[in-house]
Amino acid sequence: MPHFEIHAADVKAAQAFYSGLFGWKFNAMDMGPGIEYLIIEGNGFDRNLTGAVMSRMGEAPKAGSPVRGGTLTFEVDDCDERYAWALANGGAEALPPMDYPGVGRAAYVEDGQGNIVGMITPAAEDN
Image 1 (cartoon, helix red, strand yellow):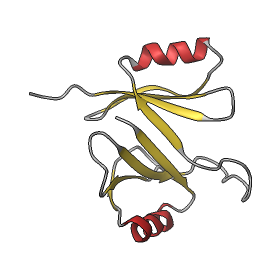
Image 2 (image 1 turned 60 degrees about the horizontal axis):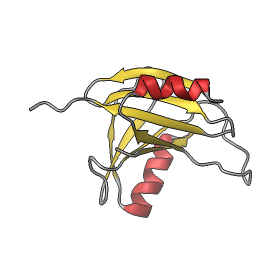
Image 3 (image 1 turned 90 degrees about the horizontal axis):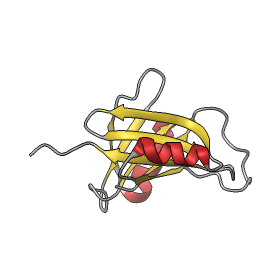
């Protein structure tokens, strides 16, 4: 389940921009105090591709600076094992593994090159 996040200082403005640009709709997801997190709905978004607009954690990069995008999250078989591998192989902690009910277990690491990448083990589907 590939997932991306668009970080924004003004989530409502980003919501309006992407809604107008691509026709996306949004549903709020509770991520805790002080974090706005809007799951994207629209053409092309399903179990195989998800996205969100979320509160930026810190200062926005300076306009015109290189790569000012969001984060990509990729599905893995074992989030904890991959997280440990990343830390042992030049990565640094960005967000340790955490469970998100109904979503799965996710973690984020810095890749040693100034990028953050996420990994998720999806929650088991109920039969």
